[in-house]
Length: 128
Image 1 (cartoon, rainbow, N blue to C red):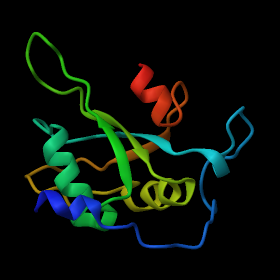
Image 2 (image 1 turned 135 degrees about the vertical axis):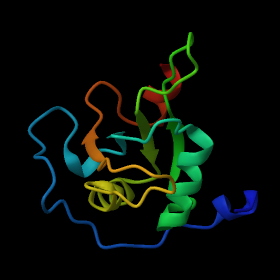
Image 3 (image 1 turned 120 degrees about the vertical axis):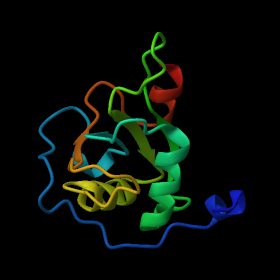
């Protein structure tokens, strides 16, 4: 994985919200870019997660990854917030990583992906 790989553009994909949560709240699915991914393996930090996203075809498709950690122990809380560069990429990420279990480490957890309810978009994440 080279640092320059993140500069590659995202593949284009036809927008679809099929099978995703409805858009009954203030920010509809068609405008969302921020997801929360849960069920991460023990010890997963931001760099490992970014390498996984890149390996899975999302190089250049996200612009923010936040993995909360316990300051006392230095361990992650097994979830992360990810902001994708467009609603189309967010929907593709949602579909791809829901039920994901091809971790680069030994782990039988399956990932769960949800729309971030309290933070949507890069500016919300940076402000937080």
